[in-house]
Image (cartoon, rainbow, N blue to C red):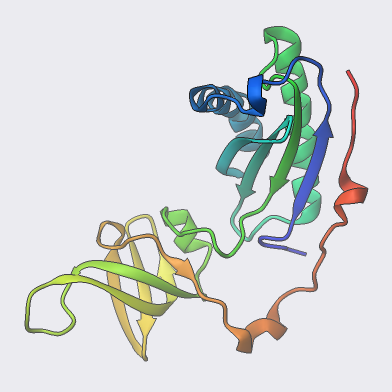
Length: 214
């Protein structure tokens, strides 16, 4: 069963090494770590047949939190997230054995699928949300046939999307725009459709945390 935005797996990995002075890592240091992580994690996610939508690294107390967002056409279920989490964890272990610490000290790995609040910025984001109600800014669009053009907000249902354009149904009429004419889209929650959502497969994080000592 596909669980878009709910599938989450957390892996705690205590590591040795001193914490940064004052408990905070320099901003440039976090950016460098993120690039090293992307170099290791990106090929693993691609090889599994998924898209790496986002990767971030931050500090939470004395440990780092590495957050990995993955997605695929049709969504990604909890079992797939677990498989990716194990593969990413193994790849990070292998990379550290050969090249030293990628994330110094303790870190917690969180792998999940995107939530509905993820902005639609790429053609694949729009394609994966065909049928959903979306609010988006149309750049340089006039409110009517007269008057100066300017940005405006529209809300419509995504009826089709390809690599170049997206088709929205707005108040019973269809309108088509190229992605260059649109800002980031935002999926709108439709309470009348809540009964169509799949049953929740939320995971108790206490059961999903794997503490591994090295």
